[in-house]
Amino acid sequence: AVCTVRSCLKMCAMAMNTKPFTVFVEGNIGSGKTTFLEHFRRFEDITLLTEPVEEWRNLKGWNLLDLMYKDTAKWAMTFQSYVSLTMLEMHQRPTPTPVKLMERSLYSARHCFVEHMMRSGTIHPAEFAVLDEWFKFIMNHIHIDADLIVYLKTTPSVVYERIKKRARSEEQCVPLSYIEELHKLHEDWLINRQHAECPAPVLVLDADLDLSQITEEYKKSEHQILRKAV
Ligand code: DGT
Image 1 (cartoon, helix red, strand yellow):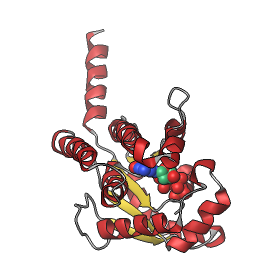
Image 2 (spheres, protein in one colour):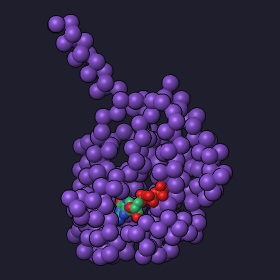
Image 3 (tube, protein in one colour):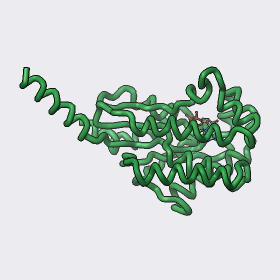
Image 4 (cartoon, helix red, strand yellow):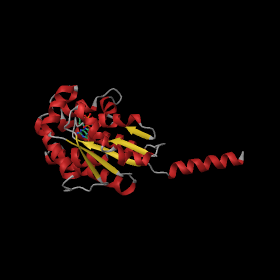
């Protein structure tokens, strides 16, 4: 019995010590992050964590995503606070495989969405200060694994058309200007390296391609991601 307990403890310790190779999939709204993750479903040894949009759409019956789009000034802070919680939970989730693929991260929430809210005056500077302090506290006190960022780079007009086509009810009022501003913030963060620290090397893929051509483009990332899964 002692042996069993010992070996069990050893296995637990091993599981806790092994850090998965962690990849964030980043890109504008409608850039195909979910499709990219789905591409990797066929491989073993990869944990796929899709974005918790469904949780944002139903927190005890409340659709926070809808409230945020309908009255941004009133709900942005609440929404962002819940996004941070759900993202942190994904970062912390124990992963039994050598590779972990995550849709978005706490970083894009802060450097793209919160940054936009602050610059556009959607949130009060005091609200921004609170969100920023939370972000800094998490960064300084909680280890967030980040080994690679796959950036699905798109042209704003292309994703704007996709967003209209998929017709997610909450996103009906999203203007092209918002998509353009989010695009610029992704570029500044991941390509131009302005105003924000980038936590891992960035692999850029052309995500303007339509579904018939995108698989070839996705394949360009397989080597970097899968060699960690063997
Ligand atoms: P995909 O697969 O690339 O088409 O991904 P989407 O568009 O389903 O996922 P995403 O994360 O770009 O956006 C889902 C919705 O949630 C979209 O309306 C934008 C919104 N969203 C995501 N993260 C944040 C955030 O941190 N703050 C705010 N305000 N909105 C966010």
